[in-house]
Image 1 (cartoon, rainbow, N blue to C red):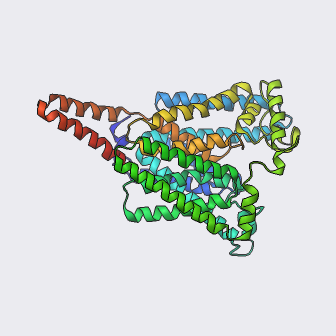
Image 2 (tube, one colour):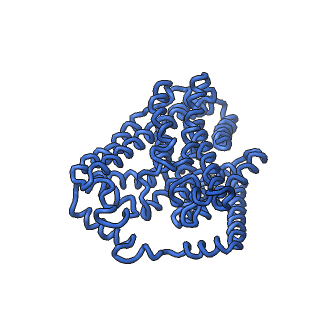
Image 3 (tube, rainbow, N blue to C red):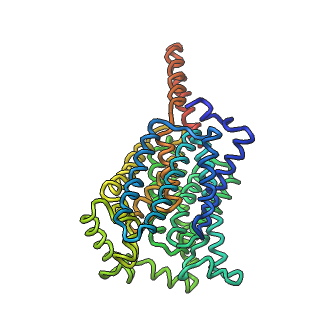
Length: 443
């Protein structure tokens, strides 16, 4: 990785600025998923050509290995089409999976090129997407113009500019945690006020999606982020800021729920959705019954059934468990590699989140959001969620980015300290620690 990859002056040409704006638009367009292909898919296809052509990707040996692992389940899914009852349906689904995987791998290399700058760019785009989707959802929920309720809600639940309230709610997790990060950082008061307003919009969107998975996911992500931020804090002042921020967020969230409960429609649906199981979860034809069928089919089909075959041919709906679905879509090998990739991201990500680095604070954000999705995958199929592939890209782009410049800086500081007179060595070491803390504060 060249020195410019972490430099604040990287990518200053007009073409590079246009490309970065294109990336931001691609992420922000992720708010609109009414149709297939979605705007994100169109932008993603352009980025596959644009970013490599302009040198805005950095492929390390680690990323190449990650690419290879991610492509194996896709290859297995293509092979499983041979067993599909409806091959055309399976082919379409698997082709979309291949495209999303390629875009994810591209974005991982984009993040590795300039980890801090490009991660911020993507997270800011995700915030814009979340606010747009949630804002549209509120317009629909309040029925502010004729037909708005039918367009932006589904079964009384806010879906925003998504087809499914569950996907809409889950998509707000990453931008919510990123705004929590902004509130806990030493940012200016103006920026914090904007972040607080944006966070309230996003949390209200999650609440009105009435998605149990999104509620749980946001809680897991917030708790994970708060934990890692606290244990890696460098001083008591920072820890007190975290404790105060968590307490304030909890109080604000409770007040938001209390206000929402004053409306009968919200209170009734909230009470109904706040149970662990629904009527459609139980029985042999319910969600849990379908998962039992899926497990039996997996054991008897080592090479898979082909994508999108369980729904309609073996059961009334999908398995609502991405890990079971991937075993059915891609066989034992593909399903196992997918599960191992998710588990490996959680395990290795926890270690990376504790590592003192320039991107540590930002990494905690994307890691916390990914952990939430890894857990939610047990109750829903998320293999085609665009923001799930984005989270994979962010996590592995940061984990596998070349750290040589940071290492070189550390070596230079240590060499200066060792070559200085004995009475000045303590000052040099303290300077090194303060520089690291200053870099983290800027992230």
